[in-house]
Image (tube, rainbow, N blue to C red; front, side):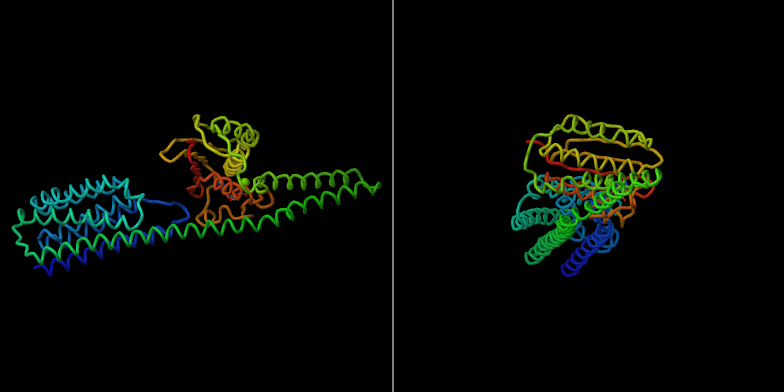
Length: 418
Ligand code: ADP
Ligand code: MG
């Protein structure tokens, strides 16, 4: 009997792995849009739980195959969220009860202790180094497997030989260790991938230093040329003069745009750290962009309470001016722009939502790349570079959600003021 059960356990472990891997592939595809999709993690784990219940429990009708479902709950809590594990627990009990009320009761009694223990350990678990994680996993799985074996005797009158018990425990503990190893690797590769993207962006930014002066010099040279023409040629017609002046002004505007969008570039590091009160700073930003908003028939709603972050005021302002400007520019036919801020455990989240043209996945992927702009001659493609750089220098991070034709939401996470 034990061989069959061990075999079913291993197959179940594989099913969990396959479901998690499918979730990962799906995740990689959407990397640019979202960073952590817990619903997807939940669906993957619930999927493996369903397969376990439907195909293995009724067939083998024993406690051991039943019990492997607990691993899904444990992994759901340790690598997802508390609600994932709790919901999986409920699904497990309900499904088992449907199969047989006795199974339901057994699942409830055997899964509750690992659920509670894991929920309790979760806070510690996310912070500790890898080897300690393994120790905790061994602990949880030992407790869990001993409870299930003891209860199996009562519920199913399974007679466990000592060797069988040891073998079962080994499979169970080894199974959880394997899953932890696998999840840790997935996590690491995800972090690495994000870091590579960030490094690439940063590298591009440093190349920018050289080209930015070139970018500004071009319009200046053109302006100088036209001014010299105006000075040297007295026979120019009035229209010609007007035309030259217009060109000179538009070229100067362009130079100004480049400098404005990329003001932060001249200041690579945050030298001056001060306490920023975000409500008044955001209000100043709104004042600056008001004329542009009015021109585009954009209505600005601001729900930003008094919160504090650390950084440099004018860089903070510049960052938000760039974001808000982009949001307004994305709503050519008018719209609503909402600025909000919330306090979370780790700091302050500031969101900027627009109802504008949005971005495709490809555009999202290129966001923050120097000179990437969809605005033709009007765009500089430098605003977002500055935004990324400023947020990074404030030790914050940026998340973007966007749908073409529906709008975009930027969320800026900044560590709170201690
Ligand atoms: P620019 O505004 O000069 O084009 P940015 O670096 O500020 O340069 O923005 C780069 C590009 O990112 C924009 O051209 C636009 O395509 C896209 N973008 C940025 N923010 C938004 C937004 N809120 N909605 C739609 N597209 C946006
Ligand atoms: Mg811009």
